Amino acid sequence: MKVLLYAGSLNLVNKSGIGQAIRHQKQALEHLRINHTTDVKEDFDIVHLNTIFPNSLWMSWRAKRKGKKVVYYAHSTMEDFRNSFIGSNLIAPFFKKWISYCYNKGDIIITPTEYSKSILDTYGLARPIFSLSNGIDTSFFKKDSKARERFRKKYHLQDHEKVIISVGHFMERKGIDEFIELAKQLPDYTFYWFGHTSMNLVPAKIKKAMNQEVPNLHFPGFITREELRDAYCGSDLFLFLTHEETEGIVLLEALAAKIPILVRDIPIYEEWLSENVHVYKANQFQSFKEQIIKIAEQNAPDLTDNGFKLALEKDITQISRRLLELYDMGDQA
Image 1 (tube, helix red, strand yellow):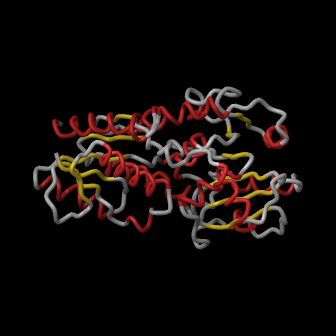
Image 2 (cartoon, helix red, strand yellow):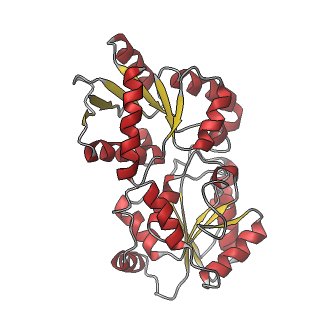
Image 3 (cartoon, rainbow, N blue to C red):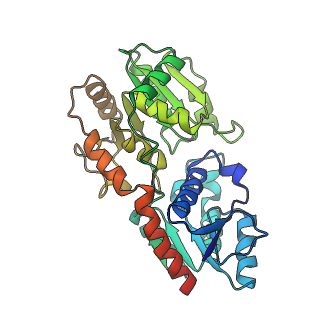
C-alpha cells in the first residue's frame, strides 16, 4: 500500500487546524512505516484528501480514472462554516452542497468526531462515514518548565502574572468578541489570542472589537508550533470560547500540555469532556468571568491530569492504527 497525502493548496490551510491535521497524518504513516508521498507524479494506491478546494476535487477524479481509491477527510461542515468570514452565513447553504459533492467523491469519508459524523449523517451522503480524531503528538505538546520560562521571557511576563490564552482565527464563531470583552472586564489578567486571519475576510463587527484599546489584551498573530507549545506551558488558563467545532486540535494540544481549560458548554463536548472532571465549562458571559477568576487564582480543583489522560487516548500512535484500518476499508470499497 502506498498513500498519496495530497497537499494541494496547502499554503491556504497551512496555518489552520487542517494544516496541522495533515502533519499528524504524515506522522501516523511514518509511525506505522506505511509507504507514502506528497508527490502527485509518483504512483500510489490510495489518495488521502483533506481540503475542499477545486484541485482536491480534480485529484479525486484523476485517482478514480486510474482505478485508485479515495479517502476524503471531512474537516468542515456547514455548521462550523457559519459565523466565520464575511458573507459566510449567506453562502453557508451553497457551501453545504459543495462539500457534500466533494465528500461523495471519496470511497470512504473520515471525520474527526462522532459529533461531526452525526451532522454529516444528515447530509444524505452516499459514502460510508467513520469518525477518527485528528490526533495529537503528546510527546511534543507536553508540560515543560523550560517552555514556560521561554514564553514568559519572550513576552516580558513576571512569574506571578496571570495569563489567559486562546488560539484560532479571528471569527465570531470562535468567540473572539467575548474574549475581548472578558479582557476588558478583567484588567488584572493578561490575555493573548494567537492566530491570524486576513483582515479582508474579517467581518466589521469583529474588526471593531479588535480595534479597541485594551491594554491587557494582545494579538501576537501566527506563531510557530514550538512557540505555541511554550504558550500553553507558560499560561494559567486556556480559554476556548468556540460556539461550534468538528473537534478542535488546539484543545487537544492544551490537554496534552496540562494547562487548565475552560470551554463553552456545547454539544460536541457533552460526551467527551466531563465538566469539573476533565475541563471547566460555562455558557453565559458572567459564568465565564467568574470561572476565569476562580481558576486563575487557583481556587478550583486541578483537572489537568484527567485531561491529559484523554489526550493520551488521541495520541498519534493510537490514531495511526485506526487510520490503517480505514485505509484498508477504502482500498476494499
